[in-house]
Length: 173
Image 1 (cartoon, helix red, strand yellow):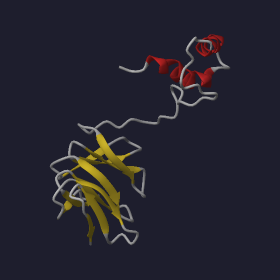
Image 2 (image 1 turned 90 degrees about the horizontal axis):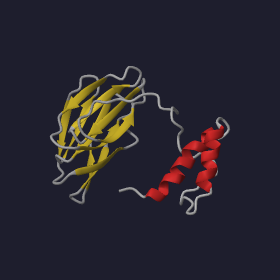
Image 3 (image 1 turned 90 degrees about the vertical axis):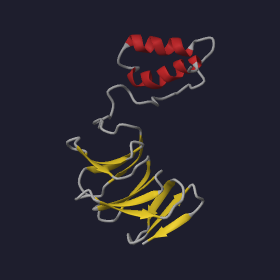
């Protein structure tokens, strides 16, 4: 399935971080560079994260792929949206999440309102929802005739724009 010619380049990108630590790794790097068909990707410096790098945590919970996420301006919190039709409000310190359910299809876009207490989501169910992040309750905004694909909150935080497969941009109060 994959292109075997990329293996050498991928290995180089990871192994260059270790070249001074182990003579066997240094020998492997030199072997890769001397191949009859050198890798297409030929990094001169470490270019891919080394194993055991900067990953701090992993937060499982959604039952389908995550489509978008935003960081909240208060606390160590994030809000994610998924093809499972839900949002999750995450505490990034504990890894705990609270499910915000209401959309009936994939949630495709999110925006947090100034202050971080409310968020707006759009979905393939052709609706937007305005969420109170403290209570978890939402208000439905209807008007699009096709999937909602993008949205933005205007700088004043009082209005929002949404875009859809119905070829319209809609302004909400």
